[in-house]
Length: 137
Ligand SMILES: [Zn+2]
Figure 1 (cartoon, rainbow, N blue to C red):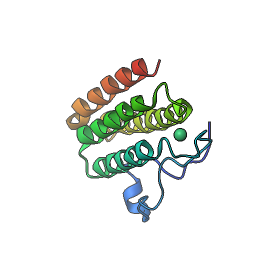
Figure 2: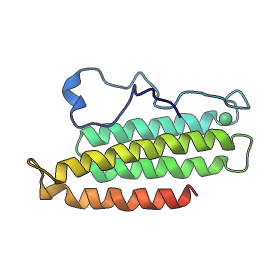
Figure 3: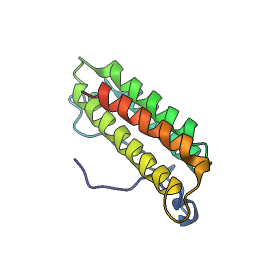
């Protein structure tokens, strides 16, 4: 869809300086209603993605995953509305974030610096990812 990566999950980002708070993860793109119909959902979903990002950096991985899950469920409100396209875009972004969470947790549980401690969170991430992909069909 878009290659813009101004925002992503990474446990390494913390030292990278800037908080991503000033950027909304989801921008208004191609809304048939000029953003009016989906504005509430968009801002709620943006909020959830941001707080998920913060929770992740706080190492509250399960909560971080729950936020993404909640955000995903909010997009379902827009189904069968003119903003169906917007909902698809939102879901795409949420799944992208979920994918990043998955990858980060996988890195943290495997390899040289892998820790068993994060395994339950990784397993939870995999589970939720599957669940959301099912809903996205
Ligand atoms: Zn819309």
